Image (cartoon, rainbow, N blue to C red; front, side, top):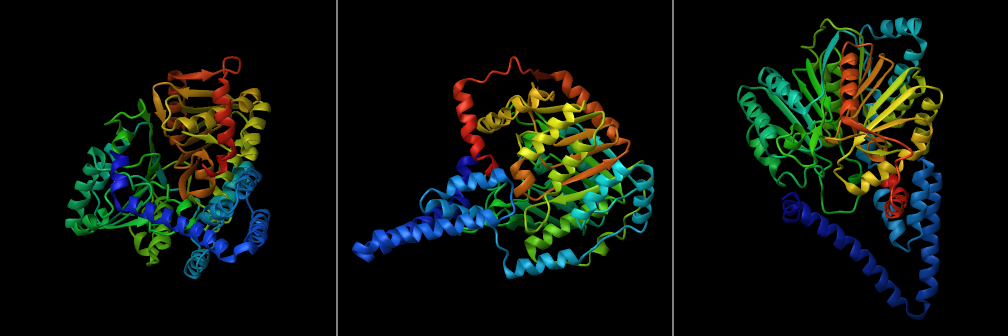
Length: 512
């Protein structure tokens, strides 16, 4: 059904036009060659050499992981097609408008009135924890550290959906939504009914959904219907029929903000499999977090920043913070964003994970639907286990993409040999992206342990330090281990075919 809708929609038309553009470029190249006659072979060979040489220089001089460079070198040696693919998906150059937007965003700084005091107290209390938080704040201008916040963790999408509905019904001022996937069904239709009702009562509603993420789940003109019902909806990075590297940078974020006081994030998209109303890959294990209080201000700004990137509009951000109030809560919260270069100068999501893993002394537990990581992150996880930290990773037993599972399982051996404990969620597919460590730190958000999340996509998460929610996250992991099968090195023996496919797929892992 999804594939049929995609082929019959405007997206199918866009894909066809893009393929026609590529075909036109190749045809133009062939025509020029024929026009040049007997000199064509010499000119073409030299031209190809020049193009490939310049592309190699671009890759060498670009700041990217060694794995990514090796992958692009393999592509570049494909005559003509290689450099063309790099031009499309490898190097993103900002337009003049985007450069101006980036400069405006970098000039915006946000600090809580008591932020300095919180950080100073934390530095005196625990320099290791202070270092993790300081590193994050230095990478994301939007982020800050917040007290005066409480939270609730949801280990199941069904439970989180029910809470979201109740909070949406109470909205009085505004509602912001940003999601990667939205699909008509019980979950989205239930939310949409509430949004329509709230809009009729004068509540301001802004919505972003990723155009490629929804190209197989929503009609191409769906925003028209939403706007007719009072919902200011737009597509993030709208698909248009032209070749552009921007398509590689999707918004994988999941953000719901209500009145600037209550926020939700986690693994949940707005489709029925996330709440197990339909079964696609066994039981769908997902969830997220509800935060109430000061930290929601950062989640609000995170949405408005992506709204600005997408719409080119920015309003007075403070107007959406006026109703925000302190609540009685334990610990510190840092909602943050992560995204592609050059919008983000550092790999925020990856660095946060690395810092938690490197500072752990007792345990680190991780859930991720995909495990496609570079050498640096692999070595950090291995080294944690080698120094005696109890490192456990839970991945799906029933995959949503079988080839990707081969690559995920390809990472097992190196980790198992270092003492990492790996589990597969036996009942089905686990989509949660959670990390908890030493009863001190936890991360809940959208950031998978794969290249797409850590390098290419716009993502978001909440880093927590000594909050009451951390014990609930730890309990959820303990329950996960009890229903998951542990992978042992002596029994993990993939067939030659699986090994071959895995090795081929790993060559392209930085692009997956």
